[in-house]
Image (cartoon, rainbow, N blue to C red; front, side):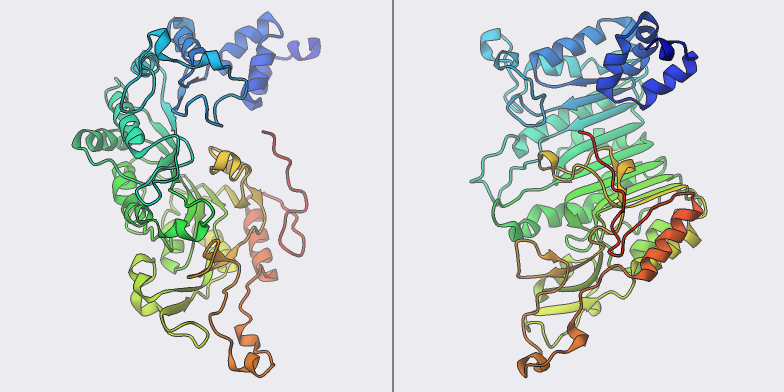
Amino acid sequence: MATILGLPREIIHRIFYFASRASRREFRLASSLTGEIGRKWVFESARIAALKSSCEGFRNILDNPELTGHVTKVYIDTVRPTDDRVVRDKKPEDEFDDADNNDVDGEDNLPRPFWDLVNRLHEFPRMQSVALRFHAECDGEENDWNWVTQTIDFRHSVLRKVFAVLANLPRLPTELALQDLQNFNPTDADTKRDIRKVLGGLKSLRLHIANERDEGNGENDIEMSALHDFFPSLGYTWLAPAAANLEHLTLYSQCYFGFFPTCDLTDIHFPRLKSLALGNFTFIRDSQLDWITSHGATLQELYLDDCPIMYEVMVDANDTERTFLEQDSYGAHPRVDERKVYARYSKRWADYFRAFNERLPHLQHFRFGQGPHWWYNETTPFEEEGRITIEFHEPYMTYCDGYGPSQYMQSLIWDREDEEEEKGGFNPDYESRVKPSEEDRIALDALLKKMGQEVELDEDGKNCQPPTWDD
């Protein structure tokens, strides 16, 4: 420790910068010097949850002018103490109850001391970033038998109150993250107005979308009506109001989106976009690639987390209007039931990587593969796009309507056998499984090398030295 304490202050600052939040707290206690330097880094962010200890700690920061000036980011956790995402060492007496004369708000069941502190966000003079986090499980009209922690009414109430606070801050936040935002849009005029006002001042927006799930019947998840109401309007409601100033955009979803449910972003352009991260986004048309490369004048970072190319799809003939493909893209197929239609997409990842290489001249960092902690606490990775393991992780998929537990599969399950199979033979034309090719790997390698990134992949396209992620 004496050797570290002898380092220049600038180096100690860098140590704090790269350390985890827990390590920062420990290192700050090492000496008076690290205590002084570490104050800035330990109190750079503050977190409030509906726990007595959390509210007390948050109030202590607010009541100390020397600390409030360091806070630039606030995490607002709405999960209750019985939920997984709250600290593991919680104690029963840490939860608010009526006996403490701390009655709760009837709409969202969060204690009033919690909301009293959220209403004091204006006391952080340097706060520029807010992360609002919900529970990963969702209530819904189609599966109301399954009890969940946070109902739709709960989420409506929280969104209304938080955005009312943010919209009335003396200085609007420039960064906003919403974790497990359920796929519905507020309908009351005041909340819609506040959301648009906050979005209009943002430089960074992270949206992680949660949806209702049918436990044990995963094939029903993609049929929930809320999905098909929300995603087609995502661009207009959440992105267009922020388009003029946005420099970073993250879009993740618990379910695959883009193809089905359809999510068309091609009409929205971000003239200042420097960083783009997509999670569970599906590619099936050239216009999606063109939309990314249309930001070539500004884009410097691109992250694709579990984002497959859909090379074959078969869908119910009555569902084509809910997909990203136009009607004339579909046709009949001898191995597909007459009640369904079939389409294929010829582009491969080699085509995409070459396009990124040629049409994104300012690209400095690229990650393609899968990030850490997918489905940890039943949710998607949050604020971790920079830690994606570069590899071919399920890069090609199909949509196979009528099958489960998920319609998204590595290859189609055909409804009918072809003539050769019926005769005991084999028709290679129907062996449609697509795997990463040597051309794909060469194109990825060329793109990475252009930016000074190195990665070693095995013959299956997996990373030869995958990182070990810390919790």
